[in-house]
Length: 221
Ligand SMILES: [Zn+2]
Image (cartoon, rainbow, N blue to C red; front, side, top):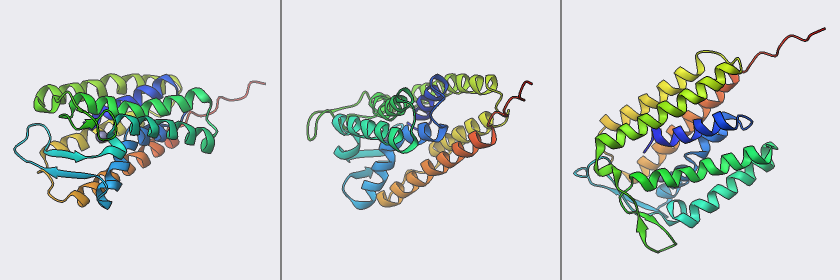
């Protein structure tokens, strides 16, 4: 699941535009940013099996990022952080928190059972990765619907015309690259690569919003 996570970010932005786009874009992958860092330190573990359908990832151990209680804690922390640091209205902060939690729900849909319901407890996952074509269709479909809603709200606010197609094109490009590139073999390298991609997309989201900022309406005298 890659593009599908961003569908949640764009849907949240369309529904509650008062949080900056980059907070939603970081938020939808915050749990994976933490995962990348913990994979690099060895606190969480992944291995690779290229014979698996959909994704070669064997996610053996990730209690601090992808267990249900951990993801709830990450979501609460993110909501409080944007409320405190960016002085966002409560509703916008809650939407950022919900976007963080959406990561776990989307992962639940596609992962094979590797998400702990409790620290060290039962592992769940509906395993849509085992059906790669429907899995890709769900991800791209969600991104198309949420991306259209987001682009529509941007147009209504008078934002620039290019930002939405460029950002959506970037997401689809990364999705295709992830599909065609060979499966990794080096967990630490994969963790670092994942963090780099997520941060580049966050920077792109920041730039899109900055460039596309609505021009203030001329004052009526
Ligand atoms: Zn994840």
